[in-house]
Image 1 (cartoon, rainbow, N blue to C red):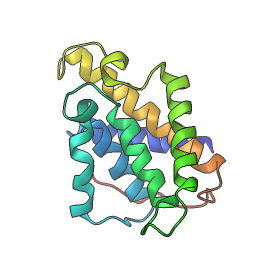
Image 2: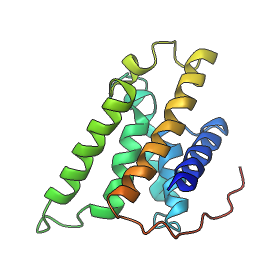
Image 3: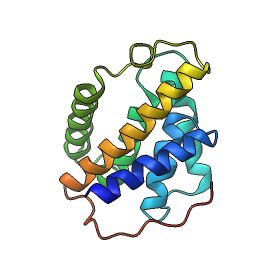
Image 4: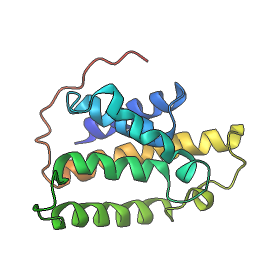
Length: 155
């Protein structure tokens, strides 16, 4: 499990350093890990979640991106399907995130001015740490078998 969690942290961190926001970095990283079930147009849905919903300081974009990733495993395609599986996963991961980082809101997780050097360093750490936490959670829940291979991704 350690190698995959460290790989997830590294990939997401590199994507953040390359200019993606926290939510985009998480979604792009795990989309690649899962052999790209989302097309490039679909990846756009994460863009507005950076900075806690467009710099509003609300729920951390890395957490929002993680919930989107969990939806790839247990999300619904229509209203006749049970919503409990994704709700349970999302709630449990939310609690893991909160316990790991001490909160869920961007404004409390990173108090520095948006896009300042200090802010970017804090977000880089949160984004990588969230990817590591998410990979461990996904493996713990048996959502992947752990025998996948990471694609080669140009940064």
